[in-house]
Image 1 (tube, rainbow, N blue to C red):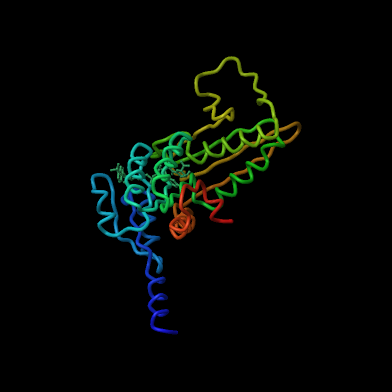
Image 2: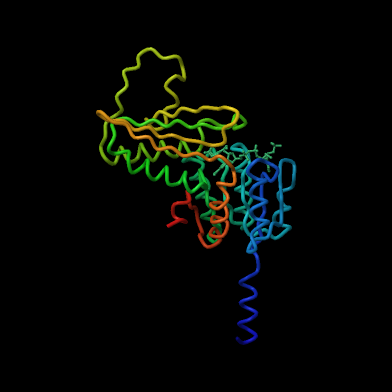
Length: 260
Ligand SMILES: NC(=O)C1=CN([C@@H]2O[C@H](COP(=O)(O)OP(=O)(O)OC[C@H]3O[C@@H](n4cnc5c(N)ncnc54)[C@H](OP(=O)(O)O)[C@@H]3O)[C@@H](O)[C@H]2O)C=CC1
Ligand SMILES: O=C(O)C1=N[C@H](C(=O)O)C[C@H](O)C1
């Protein structure tokens, strides 16, 4: 190999410089450990509540991973895009309006990539795909998510996303509303209504992140269930997104496109 090509090979094997926002949180701690353990990645900034975001740019972060809270994630994301830093977002709370704002920011920074995934667990991604596939065949569909009691938002981002996928598949198949004769309801008893799909949120000590999607039609039901027992389950998906995001300018929603 010529000297020039050797130099190029060395350049291309430089580790990707990664910053983590929410670094002292439950997910942030796991992400820092996973990035630190990966030979092709370098953990250059660990930022949490009260720290200066410029620590990430000063450290030369090429990718920032955000696992913070729904009320601060938009400001973080806007700052990163402005700085030209690609972002992998796991934080929940993304509505269609929020996604549209992110698309607008990105339209002014064509080289920047953002991956926002409601769930980085491979099993959870498959659960959502299977649910979307099953939805057209069943009269009824409800989502039951179960999480640890320290979770700030309900229903979960995964449950909301699943409900939207089910609603979209039902609409495409021309299905009518779901049968439900409830006339007399204690508020909340039938769960939240997300695009016409009922979503129930359970919080209990001992749980991590779990979800069931229950489908029903005449004489049969189908239950699709996923359980994350350990936050390590999210790390292969997070690392896949970190390694891919700089090569995917614009907004990518969900891990599906990266897995394919
Ligand atoms: N997509 C996925 O696969 C997954 C997504 N999640 C989502 O990720 C998010 C984080 O979850 P989890 O780790 O359990 O939550 P934690 O509350 O444990 O962690 C959030 C961390 O962010 C910190 N923080 C708050 N504000 C800022 C800020 N402005 N800048 C930097 N850090 C800040 C918090 O500090 P302090 O505590 O001092 O406020 C805390 O340390 C949630 O939205 C959750 O739903 C979780 C698991 C998987
Ligand atoms: O807060 C959590 O723990 C989780 N949050 C995400 C969500 O809201 O869907 C992903 C996973 O369910 C764990």
